[in-house]
Length: 478
Ligand SMILES: Cc1ncc(COP(=O)(O)O)c(C=O)c1O
Image (cartoon, rainbow, N blue to C red; front, side):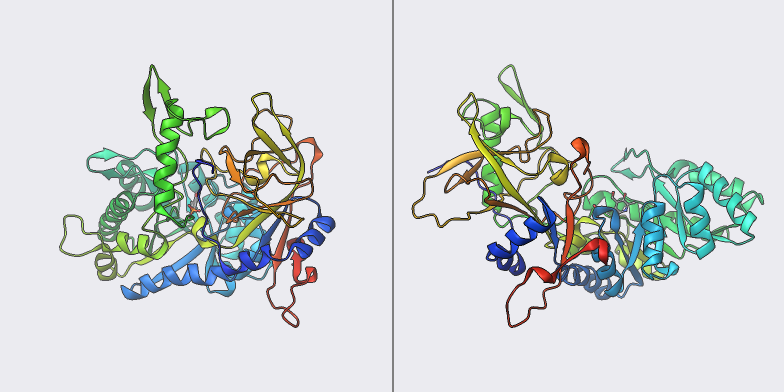
């Protein structure tokens, strides 16, 4: 038996149901090519409700915006809108497409890191809120709004919060230490930005710390009181995204994986990753340095519970942050992306070849490339599923790496070596689950002229209980 660590993903019923449907999956791959991304959006209601429940528990005025940058399909945006969410948009194309889908401008916000004139013109014309990052953006919005003779609704993105006396660095936003003077000089003491109508404050923090988000919210609430004394009313504070979700079934597996990775990098056991990559760990002169640089795929506090902990935080006060917000009549907003897509998508690819490399490791080549399932962190740490086309009468365990189609030595789809009951055959299917948040689209590219994967939306209404490939709609046609 393999001693490789396994990392068993949480898989919802629809994923298991789909994996029983080899014929349907084969038909879909034959029709659309490999790989395909399949979305089933029912879980978004559960994810949305986990946040909604918490806001309601605290009696807060709230609004939840789905950060659509995490997945580019129209299907997930339509579902978010149908659930009553607003949409956080990050480009002209994202914004304009939402309008084309009939989403009211009042439900759209623009947080794009770079806002070109075309985007600003469209947002002001339609009356959507823009979150501003710097003085040049204020000037652009002022110029466009005065040309249209129409006030622009704006919020300020703020950064540079202090957490236990340490300042959090961010390349985004107005620094907390400068913004008061900036507003006083340009909004209160001058007509310079007289077409900008202030509505609220915004932050989005890197990483996944509850404490840092609580400190940031505390400092925004304090700043809103200062602004209020100067006659500027803060209607909302938007706490951004970065709310954790949990991908894995077992904490014990997560702990064992950590242990084994550390041992492997220290050369105490055989490598468990391709080329013994440390995923953040490094052995220097026999000592292990660094830390795991992947998403925390297992975590105990996620989604609504994570939000509850932020809102329950008390910093130098007998009141928690929800109570302070309520007392100041401030609406709390958030922009979850990844966590709103928990249990919403899978990526399916076909096996093209198997071979053993010069070190004896098995490589299983898939008809896909590394950009079609790529994590912004060091690796995507979930075991994939293999659908063998032929019944496997007996197990012949094997350990493999899955490789991709780009002409790069580093096109290894998962850095982890994966233990399987049998070696896949050419034409077998490999399913990567829970890939809808960032994994499918964020880094995808068309090098070698490979077409981008087709995105399908599974409408789970079945005729006579049978699943049929016609139930899977191409997102382009929505
Ligand atoms: C401004 C802003 N809001 C929301 C999000 C969504 O974050 P997440 O997907 O981690 O929830 C991001 C992600 O980068 C962001 O930049």
